[in-house]
Length: 126
Image (cartoon, rainbow, N blue to C red; front, side, top):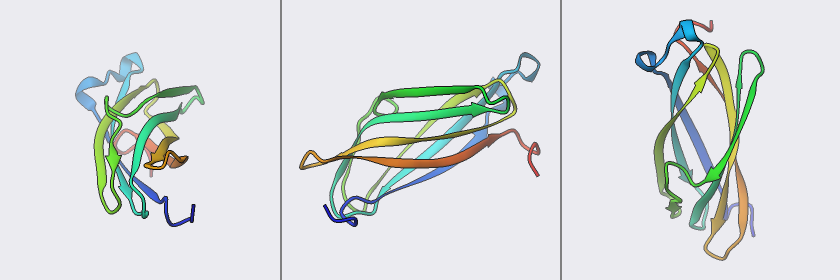
C-alpha cells in the first residue's frame, strides 16, 4: 500500500447542550459533529470506533463499538460521511480522542486517528 492510498481526514465541531445538562447534578451534555473525508485513492469502510473521553478530574471513559450511529459507512475517494453524536461529562470541560478502524475493498485494515478535541461549556476557557 502506498501512503497516499489510504488518507482519511477527520474534522470535529462541538456544542454544549444546555437544555439537557444539569450543572448542579454535575451533568454536562455535549454534542460532537464529525466529518470523515476520504482524501486517499481507495474506498474505505468504517468498521469500529474507539473513544477515550476524559473530564477535568481526569476520570476516563473508554468506548469501543461497531460503526458510528448504527452505521458502517463506505466512503469512496473524494467523498465524506458526517454524523452527530454526544457524550455526558461530570465536569464543564473535558477532552475526547480516539480512532476509527477502517478497511479498504481489498480487506486491508488500518486505524484513522481522531486527534484530541476539547468539550467545554461557553466561556469556561479563555
